Structure formats: structure tokens, C-alpha cells
Amino acid sequence: MSKKITLVLGGAASGKSAFAENLVISCGKSRIYLATAQCFDEEMRDKIERHKTQRGSGWETIEAPFDLLTPLATIKNNECVLLDCITMWLSNHLLKHSDIDHECDRLITALAHCAGQITLVSNEVGQGIVPENALARQFRNLQGHLNQRLAVCADTVVFITAGLPCLLKGKL
Image (tube, rainbow, N blue to C red):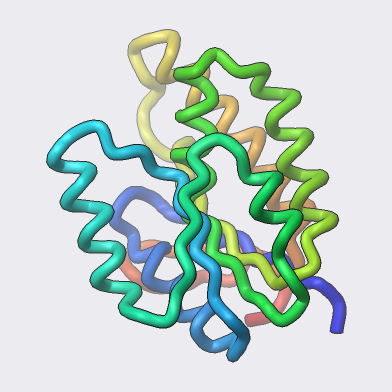
């Protein structure tokens, strides 16, 4: 069986993480959760706990707010990865003043070489108004370009809105 990459896009609180979790559960392989969020406040701590509760048991969690290459390189073909989420990973790098183009190139390469099945979660951030500040506009543009690159690499792309999936590419 060939490697499969699924990209799940959607707005905030659209149901994309729950949809992606169900995809990974249905793959029937060992489940790895690559968590990119960093916990800086009580609100984020609560969100992370809600996600853990929602996922339930049966997941190996790897916290990877910056380095996705190392864990992706260790994934075996009998494992299914949920990377949640690309948006937080990109935000982490932007705030760290990383070389974003270099980090995105490295991510695309790591995804191409990963032996397991991968489901990526990412926010669609370009459907709202133009942000008023330069950092937010920069982030929106970087996220939009990265989502486009990921969509090219992905075998399947699904857009989630109001908890409902809309297939954009491939098969579910």
C-alpha cells in the first residue's frame, strides 16, 4: 500500500480535529498524535485537556511544537499519525523568528519520506477580513501558502465547516 497523506482544513471550531481523529481511528493502525500546541495560559491548557478527553485512550502523544522532522522520521508503516495542527506549528515558528521558508521546505520533505499514514489538520485562515496588523497579515499569507503546498502533496484534502466534510481532492 502506498503512503497516504490527508489534509483536513477548516476554520476555528469547525470540527476538523474531531473529523481527523475519526479518520485516524478508522485506519486500524497504531495511532500517534503529534501535538504542536504550546500551553502558555489557562485557556490553552483547557483546550488541550478537552482534546485529550475527546481523543480518549489508545494514542501515543508526542509533543512537537517546533521539530516535526524527528518524530516523522521514526514513524513506521504500521502507524497512523495525526498532526494537529499545522497552524500552531507555523505560528510557533513565526513567533520564534525562524526561517519560515526553510522550515516549510523541511516539513514537506519530512512528510514525503514518512513511512506511515499521515493526517494533517490546518486552519483555513483566508476567508475572513484582511487583518489590520502586519504580523496577522504575514501569518495569514504564510498559512495560505503552506496550505496550498500541503494540498499539492496530499492524496486527500477535506474542508470541514459546521462539522460537515466537503471533499476537495481524492477519496475518503
